[in-house]
Amino acid sequence: MSQGPRGGPGRAGKGSEAKRSEAKRREREGGRMLRAGCRAALLRRPPGSAPLSGAGGTEEGLKRTPLDALHRSRGGRMVPFAGWSLPLHYGQGHLQSHLHTRRCCSLFDVSHMPQTRVYGRDRVRFMESLVVGDIAELKLGQGTLTLLTNERGGIVDDLIVTNTSEDHLYVVSNAGCADKDLAIMRDRAAELRATGADVHLEVLDNALLALQGPSMARVLQAGLSDDLAKLSFMNSITTMVFGVPGCRVTRCGYTGEDGVEISVPAGQAVELAEQLLGVPEVWPAGLAARDSLRLEAGLCLYGNDIDETTTPAEAGLLWTLGKRRRTAMDFPGAAIIMAQVKEKPKRKRVGLTSVGPPIRPHTAILGPEGTPVGTVTSGCPSPSLGKNIAMGYVEAVHSRAGTTLTVEVRKKQHPALVTKMPFVPTQYYMAK
Image (cartoon, rainbow, N blue to C red; front, side, top):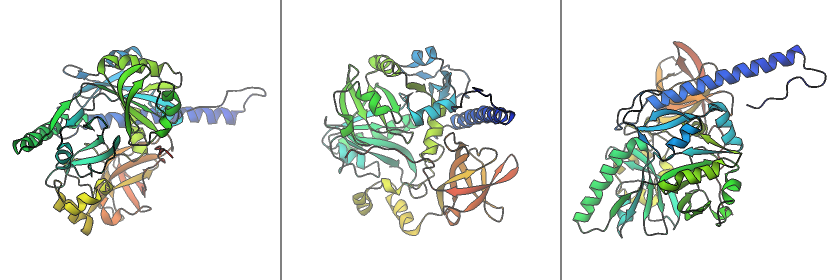
């Protein structure tokens, strides 16, 4: 957090010194609490993922991204996450990294996220047999967030599916769900091919870099011949980026800021990353900042905020259901999900704000009578807002914004306010 100069002409009085000392103390405490919050998130693995060692534990058996050596050379603190070794934060620390992303631009390595191409004339039918979104309506180059569901209406994973102009669908999914997602997709493709359908999969070994923040467009435009001003949120192009050919640039991200995710051939990922990090305002960022940024933006973390026991209606994600799909009811779990649309779910995902000790996952949420009405799924101190933020599930009757509830932290009760999300306004870019 930036601070004014110390002393100066006339010298600051004792009151100013005390304020500066208190600001420093809060910054140190905030950083400590943020790091602890991220470690808590890391230790809760998505259902179905491989067992992980604890944050800071052994790296034996972990996968490494093409940028692994670069992270280590830049002082990245490496931790296990979803079976991968990834940077938690760098020398500047979590708090400064978070705020820098909001003010300037940061580069995240998200190469652990699986990337898959779906080919064949029946690729849309294949995809729509698994997810709730209207894939057929996507224009060339357009993508959408969608949900892979099961027959009970639960969320198996959240995916980004793009209808590319190269005769395939491009799918990005979550690392913790990689094995189960691929098994589901392969089994379904085999079932369709047995009936004469034309569909097949290609799992990419590309790296994936996320450049996020308000100065992203200016930084990236210097390495593109394409005009970024014409590329809207959730749209993508294949182009050369800073001399590296064959990159897919998608305007999206997990921070709430304007940003892109760049799929780049693994052998040239370091070259591209070094080009981007050569710009002074671009900092490397890790899992800690990514988690607090996404929480401020009100975005779900699979395995914490959504999983196979939560439905789109409970999670507040009904907007992912295509209108045509709602009518056809031809996606897994449609009967259960659409019944909840009509009858309303018994519990809902909500945002919470509070002061005092930070709210952590698994914290009990209590109603006015002091009885449990829900559970926190994600929580941390917000670097941007200076107060605690969280999300969780509560009984629907208590889900209205402005409702005062109570959270139990360290066996003490503290007031928490149900708050609309996102906590920090999003800055997604729409071309004019």
